[in-house]
Image (cartoon, rainbow, N blue to C red; front, side, top):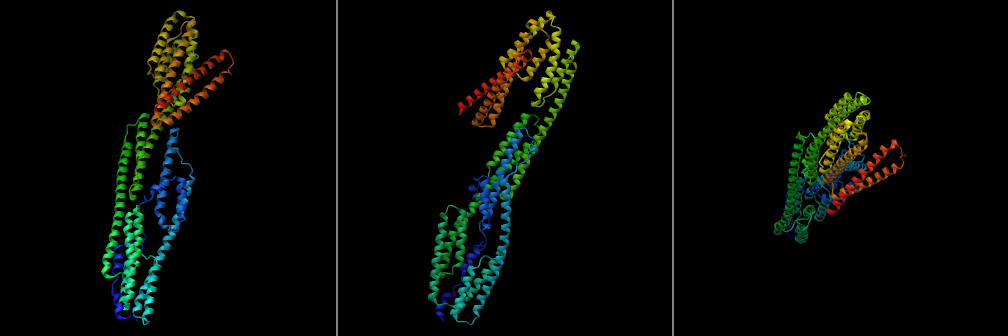
Length: 599
């Protein structure tokens, strides 16, 4: 039986335990969720396959709840890469002539896998949550029983040693029981501590045993203080905070210390805790500030995209090229910005995506109208071809000439057609016109006197063409104007017909070649705006190899033409193509040399 003097030492209330609980509302509950950016630095370095593999490993974790935020990070990173890849494929599809509205995303095995893994994770988490709630209710019931058992110890009639041993058993059992519902936690601990204090008052264990217990508690709590103080040296704020919660749990489980050291020890532990809590709060305040700044920057980009969408002056291809260039810069800047606050992150992205999609839809409508206009122009030009073909065999030379010239003027008033059809319809029209004027020239070949004037005009026209070639700066319309003038002049003396025609054809070919080379340089310049020098050089190398293959094929084809009057023109055309290809190849090689000299 313990005497009264030894029992007095246990009359000390367990205020420390109460204070730990009251100052740490997160005790016996899950640590609050951290933002989705935690550990993002490592996860964002993975590709889609790596993210799927990483998620597979996460899901087999014993504690599904702990990996919640990492799973969310994997999902965000995966779909960020997924959207970027789709944007790239869509852009390439449009650049290759496809209609953006017709674009269909290809099947993605990784996306199917990650969706299945996310479904598996949600199922496991739902089961875990349900089990956790059931366990908490069961733990609450068991702890209620322990409190009642401790209360009943006071009124029991057993020997004091038996009663005290039973009390220790109940305390040990209490520590082994897990979490309870948060709403019941404070009341539960208040009642537990009340009955523990009452039991100590009742039992009054001998002072020597109490002093040993207090000393042991002091040593353990001092170690907890030291551990808490070392946490300030830990580099990871989040890990330090989580460790601190574990120390608080341990502090709560340790019994009281002597009254004279109780407040001093708690203040030391609380001071170390405050440092970690402050770092934790500052960390998320900084993160929150960064996310708010990201939101502000993204809102500004949304405004830019929306203003771009509202512009109504894009009526040319060049204007649309400039618009898409601006939009691409905006999108690239968007990609460089981190996450916005979680509650606004999805909505701000949807706002931005809506503006971008609106611009792409406007562009699609614009080019749809252009395509429609090309089709209408093609129909009009084909009708003019039919008109010339109907009269190309007429012998009413004057009337037919006037009619064809009038048709040619009408041809000039019609807009462009699609590039892939432009050359064919022009050749058809020119062939019909040339057919008539050729017949007319043959008919009037005997009238040499009147042809001298035509010869002089054609010589002057050739001189003008040669001057244009030397000066440069002319377009395809200028060439067509020379052709119209040439066709309108009429015949020249037969003996110089071939010579003057050859001179004209050479000048005409030179002008076309110059225009093509000029167009090639402009095309290369436009490509240079969207490519690195190395990428452009590689593309030009590929073009040179294509030209070499084309030249070899054309030269080989000439060998299959049999000599004869009917094949002379065909051979001449092929030779001209070879010459133009060589000029383009030479010009392209010069461009490559310029690029390499700057690398």
